[in-house]
Amino acid sequence: MSCNNPFKTRTPVEPPSGGGVAIKPANSPENVLYNMKIAFNNYSIQDYLDVFSEDFVFAPDTEDSIAYEDRFITSWDKNRESEFATNLFTKIRSDSLVDRSVEIILSSYEYKSGNDMYEYSYVIEQKDETAEIPVVTLRGRAWLYLREYPDGKWYIYMWLDRKVQLTTMTWGVLRALNI
Image 1: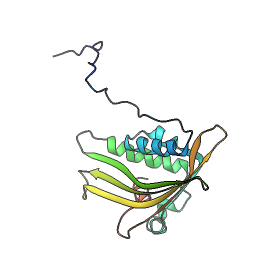
Image 2: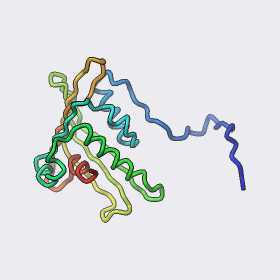
Image 3: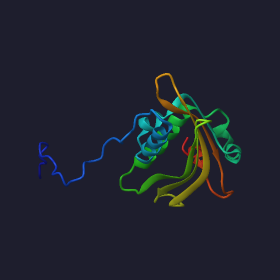
Image 4: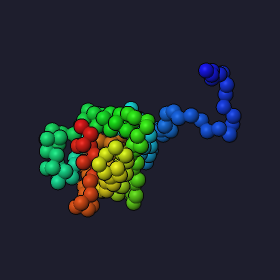
């Protein structure tokens, strides 16, 4: 038997234990995109949902909406986004002995100020050592439309997703498989 001293502090060279994620104030489109990526990569459901407006809409690639018609038949709003994030993040964290993760890599992103829109390419790696295919790579191009709301914060109000290769899965597939 042993006892850990709850009053023992860590030494300055020890890294701090895990905790919340470093979220920036949502006072610019750049900060909102940063917050989305950090919250998603750290599986922080509330921080992830905080980047979306109450009237948020996700529009999947046309092929995805046909392939997963039962999931996209109704509008994908913030409630559906919450259900997706909760399901995915819970699954990833469900068993500490199993290697599961999802990581977003954004590239060639560009803010188009006249449209208050980010256009970016993405690669998402989903790892699950218990799955038939242990590593799945998703690729696509997305457009995130943002606007400043009366509270002075920026939010994503629309997200359009498109395939860049016929054989790769997209954000839409990841969403459809986790509803």
